[in-house]
Image (tube, rainbow, N blue to C red; front, top):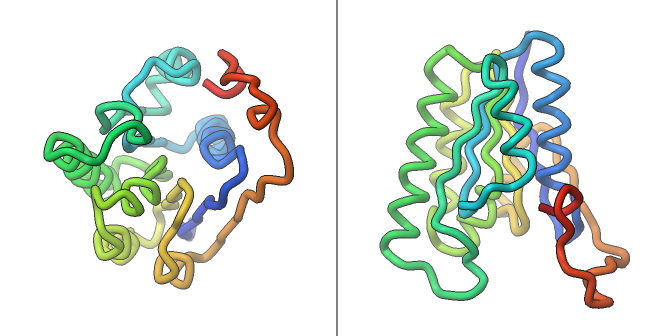
Length: 171
């Protein structure tokens, strides 16, 4: 099967959710899936269920937590570099059919990685492997090189009315 590069970006809700849906679909079809989450370091609800599917889906986090409250530190950069190495290994090892780099675009936008890191992953992707890059702020060269780009656009969100993230829906 020919693999492609997909990018889910934009300021709307649903990028990670779309990637997780694709992971479930792929696993259901017998494909092997690797998900590396950048920036994130929390016990999100999806982690609990995906651990039950460990024979088909591997998920790991490469972050130290929310980057919205502080500037990137050397430790944040090191965590992102470890994540990049893990994604690269998953992509090229011949073990996985679908590799998802969740929030890698945000890691790039925050300066934890650079666009050449993302373009390098895209260039090293074996032809049979599907690669998905998620997160706001995907760099233009990444969008240009991708085979599929979906931009989530925020029209309105109840968060703007003060509704916090709800367990099982947003986190």
